[in-house]
Image (tube, rainbow, N blue to C red; front, side, top):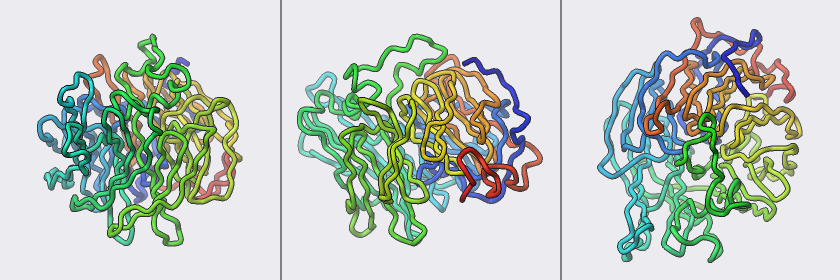
Length: 489
């Protein structure tokens, strides 16, 4: 689909700073909704293109409480920018460490970044071991500490501190925070997925096993990519290599990998202990409670032999967890606890989805397809709207009160939130590996490469001036109806 920049007269060309939370988490909030409660403008003309270096698949920026934008890259740099994209500060991590995921920002503005180092196992030619480290920075760029992940097999040549290329999330209860990160631990014959929790001081508070495949299902290099061989879109057909994409204008770079999912954290409105949800990227969705003094406690495990989860989890306000899943018969959105009131899987012809689904403010769900398309679901989770988009993507959509932003290899597309029809498209190269981000002041940040996949840029799209002063007429207005029904907050 060849979309030229156009503006829809019905789209709200305004932004609002109404005092709502910043995009401190990789997917906006701890529940991974991908939504910012602000009125925004279509992404048509940038105010700045900031050089951010090479990015890992799925890595992107987050926004601190004061509007500062933070991102880490494969050169081991942690970069901070002012809201308009002008440089604020940069820090270099120790030699050999690189950043493979988005940061996360604490309530006090502290910035947490996970970095890792890869080394050949002694005596091997293609088998690596990984060492992951949590770094903490102040909002002004002060380096506060580095904390290693727990070590396993320390007395052997396979000694590992985990391959933690999933973005961190923050558990919060009664003013106490903990940073929670999935990590893969491997040897030549064994691979496991574990969940690690750190105190804000850097102390390890929890370390629990999520999944270890049945012996024989994962072998060889024993990294997260081995587990990916079991996943769609490749696991059902060719077990080790993705299909070749030959159209440079719409293909993701050859080094693109399916990112390891982060956790989603749900806090009920009844004051209960938050639930930590993690997908094992196979057939289990697992719910944990967490206590800083006792660590993780597994509360439930939902196993479905008829599907393989292809995306990370999103937790809805009512406590249902959503993941995109693949099966021999169909691709679909599927639902699990901590709310176990039955919800049927989505229906309709959904493509393979790598990214966490996005929840719109009126309750509808949307999902970005790996091969280039946006699927919208109406009441009853029926696939009611499908838009072809230019290029592949492995990242989630970002939604404001009036617009949706989708990054694919070939363009950044802005869609009207009510109709899910494009209102603007900015053509580019090398997008689709970092999700768009929306600040509370209405800035939109989107990442792509240009002539070289080794150099990425953060494109900054401004809010309109003057900003919107209310949510009237948007999906955040409780009196506005969309195809998803009466908007609810």
